[in-house]
Length: 172
Image 1: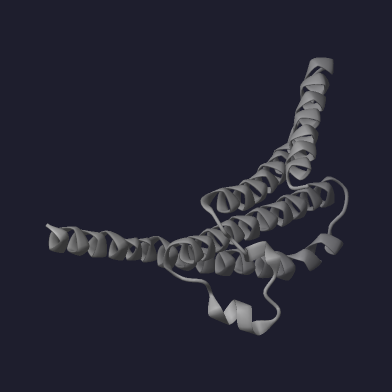
Image 2: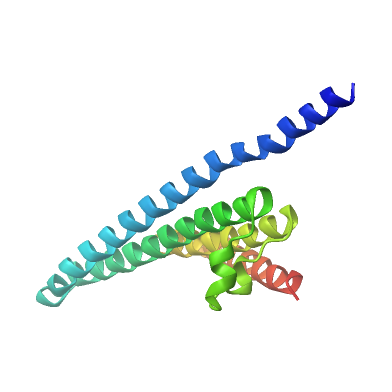
């Protein structure tokens, strides 16, 4: 009976390596998102000089488009960062500490993950930032038809502010 228990525990302990699928997939998606977002930024920079050749309403529309694309780029980089933090966190929790990070002397405390709660907390903060950026992006294209729209928008800003306040408060 002891042999079966020992064998089963070995298989059970080895099953943690299944997490490598999530680690590798998250890293690949993160890299892909970084590349896509960098390509979007390069495209924006290539077309940015066109802004100076127009005027009036066309310039106003181009400005709104540039700001929206910039906010979208921030959103893309944040999402790629979430995937990278997720991959590193899963690896450290289930597989092994990242020895290269410890040896480099440049490893930051940001990526030190000691428990699932640490990982969830770090991910929640970045997700909150994505939501703030998304709220800002949507607010750029909003049109206010009446005073009630302004009240709703103000309440939205208040809620985002409270989320940021309580999110930063929980880390101290």
